[in-house]
Image (spheres, rainbow, N blue to C red):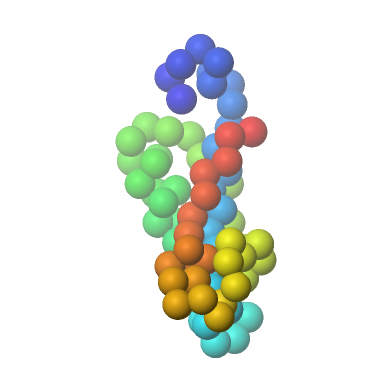
Length: 81
């Protein structure tokens, strides 16, 4: 973020959950918690996070039927705006 091309850009922290979370409410809460934890760590390092948000089970990377799907779908992404 300190490089000249990144100055003035904003950080958006997005958390995701796997469908195995049980209910859609549980998935939303877990994804929000993940996003908040990462955003807090980034802010503790001096980065300005515009928003941290959980998206629940939206945008899975792989099908829940795969053995390792949970570990790929339960993630946090940091987007530069």
